[in-house]
Image 1 (tube, rainbow, N blue to C red):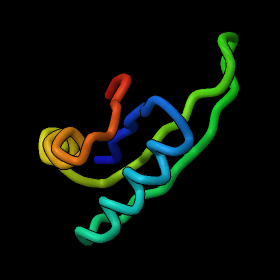
Image 2 (image 1 turned 135 degrees about the vertical axis):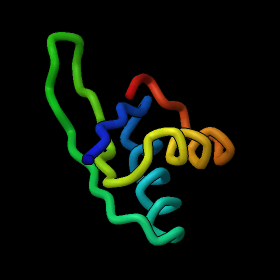
Image 3 (image 1 turned 120 degrees about the horizontal axis):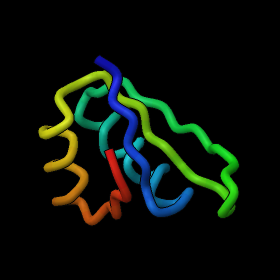
Image 4 (image 1 turned 180 degrees about the horizontal axis):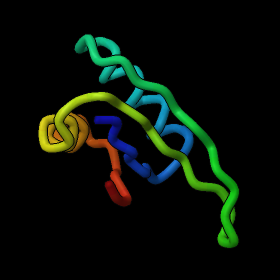
Length: 65
């Protein structure tokens, strides 16, 4: 299952992608325009709870899953 994770900024998206790739996860980043500006998402194929713990312990600001 592919998980969609919204992060606080482009910087957090790129850091999250780097951290996850170092740990062997396949993931990518997408920017989406919204009414309130831009949103950045990291897409990863793995357990959401595991990814949440990794990003949280790495200081990545996650907006929503």
